[in-house]
Structures are given as C-alpha cells and as structure tokens.
Length: 233
Image (cartoon, rainbow, N blue to C red; front, side, top):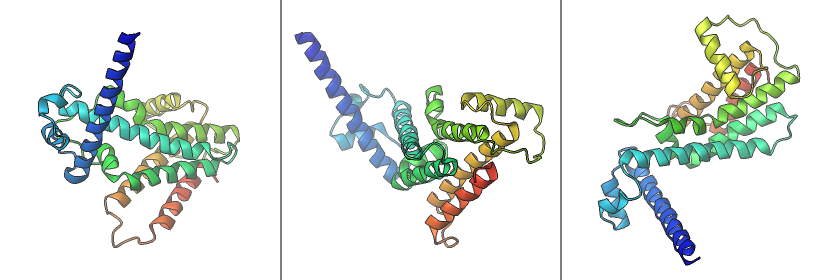
C-alpha cells in the first residue's frame, strides 16, 4: 500500500512538472516562435538543463507534446461547439465548427502558428500527431454524411477526378465515416475544409490587414458561402 502511494505521488509530481515545462515552453513560443530551447526553458524554471531532459529527451519531444496538445485543444473546441447544435441543423453544425475553431485560434495564436504556420526547421512530426490533426475534418465528414442521408447532396456535374485522386478521396471518406457521401460532394467538403483553414490563417497571420476590417462578419460570410458550396443550406 505504501509503495502504491509513493508511486502515485511520484506520478502526480511528474505530471505537474511536465505541465509546468509545457506552460513555460508556450511562453517561449509566444516570444520566440518555434525557436524553442530546452536550455532556455530550464533557465526560466530555475533548473539545470539536464533536469528537463528527465521529462523530455529532446527539443523535438517537447515540440511534439505541444503540437499534440494544440491539435487536441483545437479538436475539443470544434467538437464542443458542434455537439451543442441539434443533429438535424446541418448548417448550424458546420457554422458551429467553423466559429468554434476560430474562437480557439484567436485565443491561442502561438499554438495555432505552431501547427499551421511555417514548418519548424529540422523537426519532423511523428505519426501519432496525424489522428489528432484530423479531428475537425472528421466532424465535417459526419455532417456531410448526415446531409447525404437527408438528400441534400446533389450531383452538380463537377469535373471528374483523376484515378489517383479518386482513390485518395475514397480513403479520406472511409477515415471520416463518410463512405456514403457521393464523390463530388466529398471533394467539395475537402475543398471547404482547406478553405476554412486558409481563412483562419489569413486572419491570424495579418493577410487581411488594411483589407477587411469587419472580421467577424467576413468570417461568417465566408463559412456560409463554403457551406452553400458543399450543399449545406
């Protein structure tokens, strides 16, 4: 029993230390971008750098932890927003996802920049970052699948896809549980997904400065236009 309590205490202390390291690292992201230094993080924590290596073996391990946290927080924001809308309100669900994403992005610009900004030199994200990164597109796949069952996704005579692209779209449809969505509708959904993150990046990285002043209204108009393009009216 005493050994279990000691192990539980060690695990709790370790988890708290990991959280503190990540908290300080996020401050460095805000100040220095992705130029993250374990030595600098250790200095801010009042630790020798070798102590930080007990928790993160390298800078890349710390970056991966921050990236996973960011993807999951972004996914949580989108899923919470979408879950609050009645299942039959397909347009409302899409708008909730879009605005939920934007709310998180504007509140956490440095973390968004880490996952959707310029690649970090010398860093290659591991495979376990892939699934968390796809959570918003899985939501969109679910909305499209429900729209298909409601008969809203008509064939608009879009240009046919090359065979290689058709296979990729089919794979994405399977991953997002949207296998019943017609191919042309799935393609429009994927385009809307990339347009959505393009809109978020344009706003966050200053591409709308001196161009669009009414940002809230413009974003809402954009995502409604994207919804109409996919067939969600």
